[in-house]
Image (cartoon, rainbow, N blue to C red; front, side, top):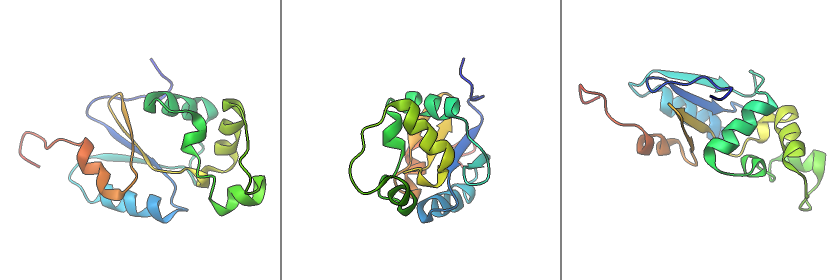
Length: 131
């Protein structure tokens, strides 16, 4: 069992309202008929352990969660490619959650990156009433 509580009837969206993709995705997902629990990483602290669980659930390295082209990342770490371990990438996400590359959808125990707001539709099934 992970740190992040989940069940099959709950949809969580990790996003940053500091990014246009995050804002658009949250608006898109919120407009659906599904019950959504939004975690705005710019307002709610997500721990390093939670970020690590998200990366593991996505089967990606923690560095993949970070937009290294975000202005705040470039201001702090420069434009050159940097070589860090997962622990250091986790600290970046904790200190600069606005650098989250893509919103993350959690349905039950399934994690998905949403590269566009409409990606949400690919990962949700209509309920029994056809909604």
